[in-house]
Length: 195
Image 1 (tube, rainbow, N blue to C red):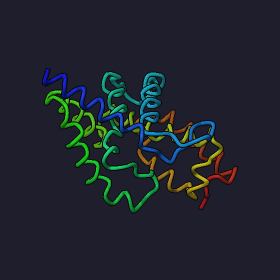
Image 2: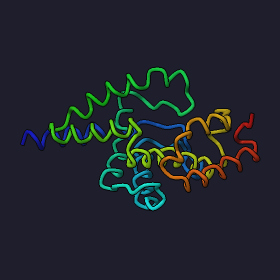
Image 3: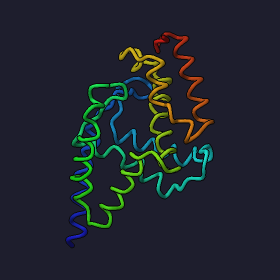
Image 4: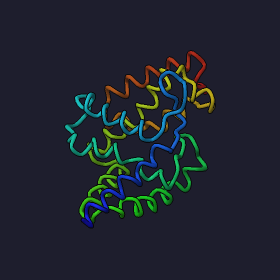
């Protein structure tokens, strides 16, 4: 029962991820999405789009990886993609959160989740690179669907989007080409600043 209790306590704790509001709007621009919605969307994208990965990926790793990658934000908060000040302390805040949150689980499961999270953060394996493609593509798709609302509100520049995606083609050249078309579209529409 001790193992089951730890698992149940973790399940209840991570329900808090539904309270972490991101800066990206839903496709209908009615409200901003939360981390749970974002992670679910990435898991579905992983299943649908894995054929576009540059290398073969293991969905038994990618799906849980994208489902847990933002659980640390329960403690660390969401750091907006273009928040330079927040980025200064992000690694420290998120590492401390990973220790606590994944430490709640039975040791074997806690280690597995932590290893997946560390692999995602290291951005070196084919699975992690593809997971990052999804993590960067999903907000871009929602920005496109919501008429560039979040980009316009934050005064996002094309160079910022390209900097954030400087390694995206390492995970999927095809998806990165698709993303570039959307970025160019929103530069032309004036939702993204071209400099």
